[in-house]
Image 1: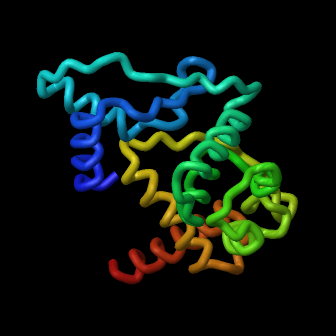
Image 2 (image 1 turned 180 degrees about the vertical axis):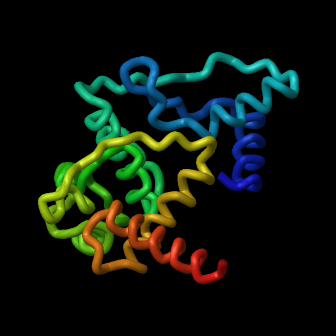
Length: 184
């Protein structure tokens, strides 16, 4: 979130209060509302008294199902962009085939899937019979997360011959290491 958007959200909260809830799953995992909670932290530091924050615990069997429900809610009330959808799907571990029951009027799903995913719907998972490793990348803030996913998309465009994220990373790091070695 840019500082301008942060300040705009802060003014909105001061003017109108908490008009949108924070969405959680399993009572503790925040799925949506990170920006509002960052603003809350600043308001509390500045001495503001904050009324109780509305929280919606999404009733779902898994984090992934909760994320899909939240995506449906947001697609009805906000404009969903291709980049924003990809970032959300990556963060929530939603695959292309998980979108079949979600209505996203602003997104051409066929074009989106061709652009961001390989044919199987999952970006690089198990391509070429390789190993799969699941991991969580912690980010300090939304800007880092946004930058990371833009970088991943850049790698995909820069190294289209590599089928996996790992393959693209190895190639990019190898190129950098060769450049560093040449400069010594």
